[in-house]
View 1 (cartoon, helix red, strand yellow):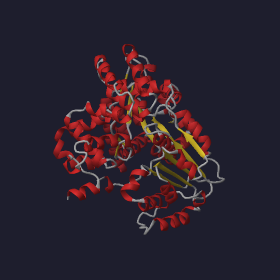
View 2 (spheres, helix red, strand yellow):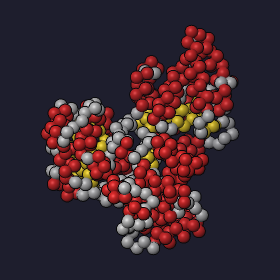
View 3 (spheres, one colour):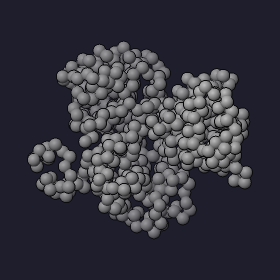
View 4 (spheres, helix red, strand yellow):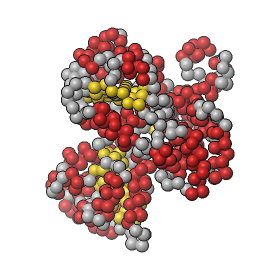
Length: 522
């Protein structure tokens, strides 16, 4: 069923982690200025008008603001007393809500010395401001109605109200930064690895074509790193393509399909049908030689894939970059990739931070759990996937349950990742197990809405709660395009559980996904 979905997605390149929307005269020199400082110190690249341009006319430039909105991960809207009196702020809010709804980007409102009900119902100073706009834009009443609706929608979102007597502003800022961290889920240990890779990538240089290999064991974070690198430099290139899960999609759809995907993403030839891999190679050379291309090939496992999809540097225009992720360094070397980066396990401090985020939803260690945390760290050995799954499995449990669960992990003496992952599966209830196996066998890569429509009859009203559990356990993720994602090691674990139902007679298994097995049964 996943075959009905595209095997690749053009990942939206983010220029900013956070977009700050605020009324400058109310908060620029105080609260918002301090919030901006806290966000940047935490490592979040934040759009802050006054830091980019000078002058109200330039700062309000629709093209600058609209572009920043489109290229931001999270929106923080600070509703202050005079926010609604600014038509620029109201237009900005409209754009934020429109874009966030279309692209599943979170909006976090801060009600700074205003009541959320005043924002939503347009009473008090917000009512006065909208009344003034209605007089001014009498002939454009539809414009004001849209602003009213946007304020109503934003006021209904979960955020942070703050008024006199609510404590210190720095405490509010800490809460906002923590909220942003949870929404962005910035991978731990990314920053210095990105610095090292940016040196290899040398994206600013227009001379030559560079192939960069990223290799490491499964679950080490190669795809996460490649996506982050892609997002950070994409704006510098003429043509973009992030081809994910090449190994799996080559098996499902063939190399010709992947060649067609690259052409569709980079030069817009969406209806092209190639007769053969050889013809695809010829066309890729012809179409891409004049373009500065950024291409990511994720999870390569055979040399034939490299020959069909990237060939040689001569396929691409000057300044192009090709990033290849794989578990096999030899594949990179045999293809002539000279710039190779090994992704190593997380350092102790990074591993502790990641585990705490997953187990406690904060980077702070609870004192009562210190010994248990270090047991988990020792066992996970710095492997990000193991840390994520173990931490997520421990989240919300009492200390006695931690002891029991860690004992289970420590019984796996060879630290086999599949066995580690299966403990999280075993902790699910029957309905949760069933949906997990359905996704592992059939729905990886499908739109969440499509999955819900197919299985809703089976799971009924509990479906959304089951999905939330799988997300919380880090067994699945939803990408920015609304697709259900599952790490290939987790998928392998799920499919192996189904295979073990009847190893010698697949027809007796609860689920069949292999075309060969289906054909045999029929």
